[in-house]
Length: 210
Image (cartoon, rainbow, N blue to C red; front, side, top):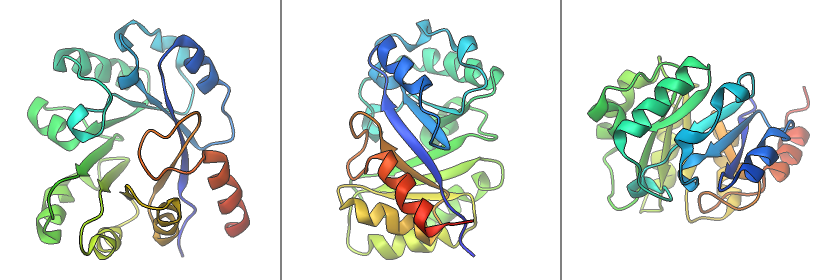
């Protein structure tokens, strides 16, 4: 039986007002703070955010992020987030290059320009599946991408898949097929194809009644 996916309310943090808005969201399972929109995320007082169901994301520009950061700043922030018990979302490429601890983290892969081999992707993510909170694969449409994403969901409960540049219905459909996470926006989409998070709450409330 398919479990209800975790609903993530994603919000670009551009100011302390956005952070205050994120603190007030209580109806989503998690709130993703897209900190790559914030000019100096290292100046945020993260200790004061402890206990909140936040996902910390400092996305790389080549994988859909807003701005580039010094990798040493990013590593320092990841260590702070881990110390305070936050889930963080980090690119698989960054993990492998910088030796990042990915236990209970979201390991992300963004496939934008190439047509991947399913066997290659499975072999690449295999070592992350059991230790990570989720392995998240986001793709822009290519011939056969629906079959590709559905095949990845067969790998277990810790897989999340995200089609981009498609109708939001497709994201909802893959959540129903078993994606561990489904993302919706709060103030503006942080990735193409996101519905509003409250719409996701209403839809899944009707489907998963228990």
